[in-house]
Image (cartoon, rainbow, N blue to C red; front, side):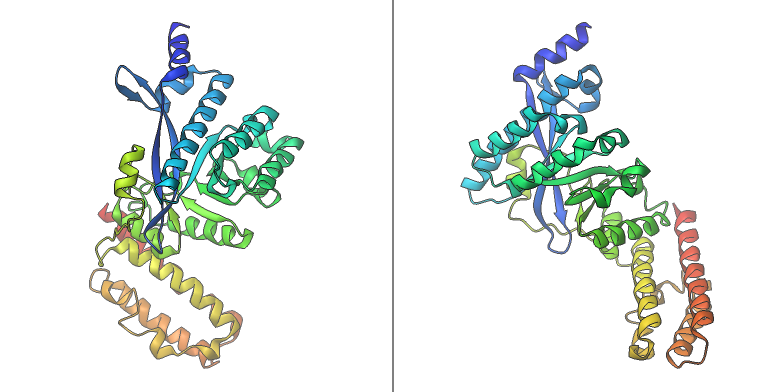
Length: 355
């Protein structure tokens, strides 16, 4: 009880907001930041895991509101300095069912003359919230204001994945459990590719959290992921550091060109895209150009993984047979799928063995 009262007292005047950049991979620019709460205790910033368990639901709601107010005030300072950026603030799902919270969000935007489109409300995924009939209506009210809404930690509750299409989300943030240690679990890139396809189909942005090194950054970029966040880019830092290091700056972070993980991602994308064309317009494919050594992600790896040499030759022949209409469509695609799966498995096994 004493510990709880201590943290509740700190909420009054010792909330500090840090910011973590979200990088737009095609441009290397920071268009969005996530605002993250800290409590200052004797000059030390405590992370959420150290104090959130001690706070009541009402305390956590006050904390979210305090972070929103600080973030909006900081947005105003950045805007006046000519630095434009959107800011995401976390709210617990149950908070958004309360009229007072919706009104506070609206009044904060008005107070700092912050366009609603520059604010993203991150809602932590949870089955219980989506079961409320009023949840969709409340999210709809935020959308009417122009606020963007992101579903945080997608993947921890299957039910919300199924009902994602029924809620007005602008973005989904993939739980970092699916991106951490990709360099040891390359097959997880299949899941990321599926999530990206789903997000594109629903017209929402996919943000991948947990990017912890340059190789993973390059691999998810090769996969086509456009928004990433994680320690490889930056830990949560102060507003001043954000201004100096990220706003208006272009971030360059590329791994070695010989990275097997990046090659895996490139071939996965190539195989998926080529399959679609082979099924719909095979006559449009130039086999020689498609299998050219300079453009093929497998060619540089054939000395590293000897089995790829024969598999690549077989795949090239199958592509030529499909384009030349020498095999039945159903049978040829079955062979194509078998070969591409074997190639990806061989690459994944080699990566895993090296980790």
